[in-house]
Length: 191
Image 1 (cartoon, rainbow, N blue to C red):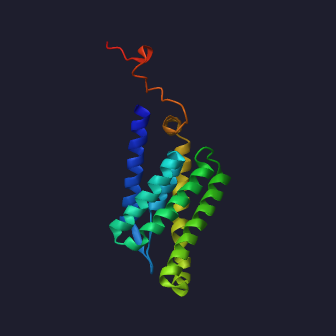
Image 2 (cartoon, rainbow, N blue to C red):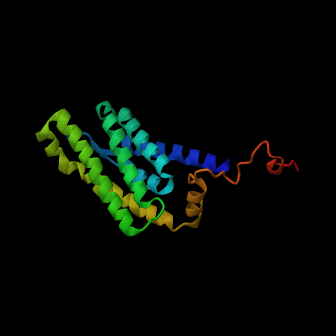
Image 3 (cartoon, helix red, strand yellow):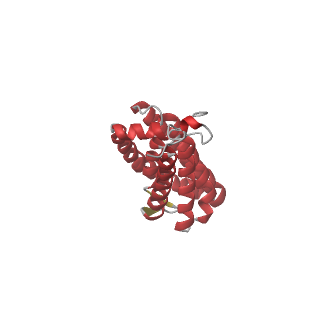
């Protein structure tokens, strides 16, 4: 039970951090804005199981667009940040090695920027999307190395590693805190 509570708590924490850092720690661009939310997406992808990290990144970022007044961007943000988080998680959730981080960050960034470029090209036209393309690379160039360095530092803390293994989603296994209520052997005894 405790591992589920920890997972739910960390999920809510990262969704809130992504939302706040995206909606309020931002610099406006011609089309959209650059923000610090991706720092927390990277850390969430390191800390949380991949399906959870994808949901946290997609929902937190999309709600930040709603809060910041960029309602038009909500669907593409959901897709772009979700795919970016999926790529990050697949590359370095289980094995946090430098080459995996670099490849994951580069591939995830290109996918995210590419999706935003296609969306802006459809909505604003090719010239406007092309003019905004160099600005779109500022965000991953700043946020993702910072998030990767913080994740690297966290990977050296034994408590963080044990927490990650405790909250990981394992198919067909029960948590050691979960007992079968109908099994007399697992019934908790009162002192």
